[in-house]
Image 1 (cartoon, rainbow, N blue to C red):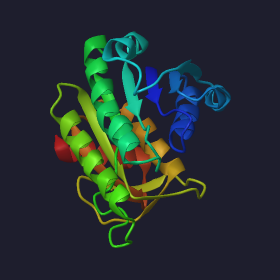
Image 2 (spheres, rainbow, N blue to C red; image 1 turned 180 degrees about the horizontal axis):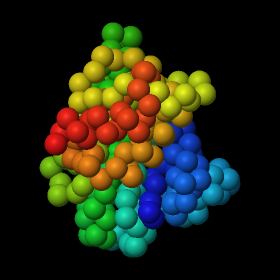
Image 3 (spheres, helix red, strand yellow; image 1 turned 120 degrees about the vertical axis):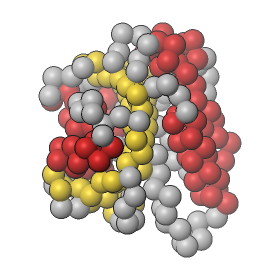
Length: 219
């Protein structure tokens, strides 16, 4: 499979790129910061310069052309509400439209668990982030794309064990970035999992089995 990653140098993105290339997929990783090119190259993916804010839909569509799937795990990462709106919000909308124009049907979005860090008093910036992520989910779910929205719990950097809990509605909890990457890797290669929002935490089910279970429940 030929896969285009937006956010390929990020915490989940570079882990996913490595898994995909190890299984033999051809991966293109988009980055804005030149320093990120090396991180992407080390995974076996091909880095390409791109900017969700500056690039037009037409430019993004040209980059996506020839790929079979797009994975969007980019984010503003606390750089301010305006950046959140432009990257997590409008950036997702542009990428989804570009995918449709380029004829790339499969689209995976890494979103946010609705209960994420609620009650911790993280301020208006965080509340804005959560609103933008929800609006982005709604936008993607109304497209004609073969979409999957993954809503991970609280992200951790513990080494992955390939064991998760996944479903359309589960209790909030922690999830290892390695496990998120493994779940997306399996989800991309299971065409039965389609047009569904999946909540994801660490758990007791192997990722491939978890993907199949969610797909079967939707059948």
